[in-house]
Length: 295
Image 1 (cartoon, rainbow, N blue to C red):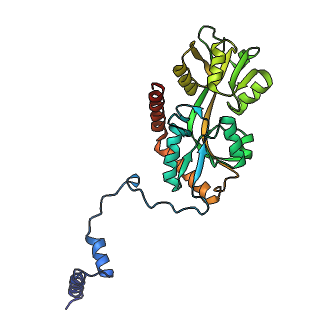
Image 2 (tube, helix red, strand yellow):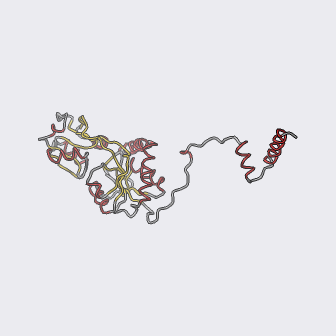
C-alpha cells in the first residue's frame, strides 16, 4: 500500500472515532470543528453575578442638598426621605454595588456637610469640587452631571451684568455653604457683598422684595422654586457665573470607606458616564417635582 493510501485510511479511521461521541477530548474536537458559533449576547443584557457583600458595610446612608430640584428635595409623603434625580441615581448605584443605599434628609445643606465631615453619613449625592472639602471626603470622577450657576435679578430691575465686576457695589444673596467654583468663590470673598441665608426660598423672596439686587444660584433649581412659589418674576442673566460638575463623594470617616468600596464606586461612576442614564433620572425628577407642586 502506498504512503498516500495509508494516510487516507488513517484519516478515515480517526474521523470515525471522533464521530463516536463521548465527553472527552474527542468530543471537544468535534464541537470545535463542526458546531456553528452561537449568536453573541450584549454585555448589558446579562445582569451577571451579584457583587459579594463587603464585610462591615451592610448599608450606605446618602444625603445632599434638600433644596435642589430636580436633583434632590424632601419627599412630601415622608419628610425624612429625599427624592429626585440624585435619589434615583443612588438606587441605581445600590444595584451596581450590591449594597443598599438610603437617601435621607439630615438637615439643610450646611448640616449635610457637617454630618459628612463627622462620618455620620457615608455619601453625598451631588457636590461641587472644592479643595477644603477634600479634607473630609473623597471625590469620584467623572462628574455625573454638569450644572450652570447664574446671576438672577428681578425682571423689573435687571442688573447690567456682563462680567463679575459688574456685581461690585450691589447687594447679593445666596444660600449658606454653597460653592460656585473655586475661582468665583475667591473673587466673591474678596470683592463682592453677598449675604448668605438658610434656604433658596428665602433668597428668592429677598430678591423679589428688593432686599437684594441679585441672587447667585444654579439655574434649574432656582427656576423650579420660583415657578412653584410665584411672586414677582425673576430672570437669569448671562454669561453664567460658573459651569460646575456634580460629584459623588464618600466620607473619610465612613466605616465603609475601604479600598474595595472605593474600587466599586469608581467602576460604577465610570459605567454611569458611559451608559448616559443620568439624563433619564433628571427628566423623571422634573416630572415628579411638577406633579408634587400641582397638588
